Amino acid sequence: MAEPRRDILIGIDAGTSMIKAVAFDLAGRQIAAASVQNRYVTQADGAALQSLPQTWADCARTLQELATKVEGLARRTVAIAVTGQGDGTWLVGARDEPVGDAWLWLDARAAQAVRRLRALPDERARFEATGTGLTACQQGAQLAEMVATMPEVLDRAEVALHCKDWLYLNLTGVRATDPSEASFTFGNFRTREYDDTVIEALGLGTRRHLLPPIVDGTQVTHPLSEAAAAATGLLAGTPVTLGFVDFACTALGAGVHTPGVSAACSIIGSTGMHMRATDIAGVRLNAEGTGYVLALPIPGLVGQLQSNMAATLNIDWVLRVAGDLMAEMGHAVTQSELVARIEPWLAASSPGALLYHPYISEAGERGPFVNANARAGFVGLTGGHRFPDLLRAVIEGLGMATRDCYAAMGVMPDELRLTGGAARSPALRQIVAASVGAPVRISRREEAGAAGAAMMAAVAVGAFADMEACIAGWVTPLLGALEPPDAALVQTYGKTFPAYRTARRALEPIWDLMAGQG
Image (tube, rainbow, N blue to C red):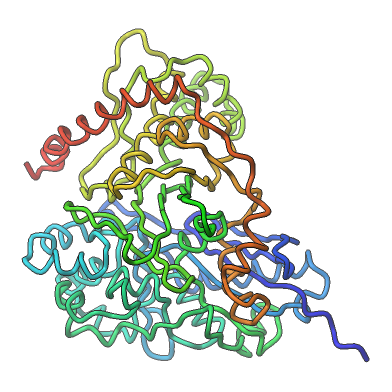
């Protein structure tokens, strides 16, 4: 009897909004996808919590549903890879049982710990090692907050994981994390290992035992366990790759690195991630101590990035306001109907008429500055402005935030690759292109995060000799044509940006006063 075809790689992307499982053939073509809505709760004290058992159950369900769409999925799967939402704290105790709910990256409760730690003399040394500014969304700050306020919870924990690590544990029975999250949270981006200086600067020396081993998923896989096989319908023993953090995998799949091209990648989703790939010598750390530097699954390369806490969440808000008003008048509309109106509304408004700072997240902002009290707002309103002007200002605010982030890294990109749901909008692409002053290019890749994880698995199992070869096959052919920015818009936004940045700096003491800290 002929050996069954083994020709599929599965990428799992457990994001904040959705958990997805995607099947790719070995050449990188997407075959099918399944998804379920992710579930978490928020509380008045700033908590954002997610159930660990529910997350694994939802992940398993996506794999079961994927099997209904791909004939013979289990026997055809060469390998599985998993990535997921970054930062946050997923505590696991005895017998691999959860210790309470996970703290998500959206959780704002560690803001006080961040203020305390950033004021300590060791903070600059921590930043120089990690290349990463300390924020309330990170596991280091969250563990420091738990040490101060709920040490008994940590006493019950045996390991502190991230979202993808928790799923990897359920898939393989192995407690581990990857080089990207390990080094930007607790380590050194130059060595991709934990760093004693960083751990001590966070006040976590006595909790170091909570940090799991670091595994590079391009080199090491573990077999799918019997229990996971029963839960997912896949075959026990199938190799499983632990992917890098979701924004590293998404940027990889969307084209952050193409040999010989000076490009950058912005992910315009719920959050905004703005990343350039560079060798270690090319990293430029800013004086403010903000941003991230994270290992990429390519030897010798790191991603330097600045990250906005909220991107399309701002658009969701302004459309929700419009929808609520229409519903009160007896004209209920769906979100999709409102989204379809964005382009006409933009056409009915004037560029650069208003400023909007897109800090709509209750956790404030983390890039290119860190302030948990930062809040969204308009500047320049008059009685003549109408809803289309407000909507345009919100979207222009995303463009200004993108430029602000790249400016903080010291190098404006020659070419910008865009991904994320908002990248499908031609008007938004033009606004971002003109804000940054660079042509944009989008990828036809539908699920960049899952693809980036699957690319790691493809290298790990030998389907490609290295990541450069995988990029040539999986990424480059799917890049669209360059879309140059409109010259008039570039000029307009070139005048707008200094006002945007000056205003956000001037507003910082106002935000603190409003939070009762002035």
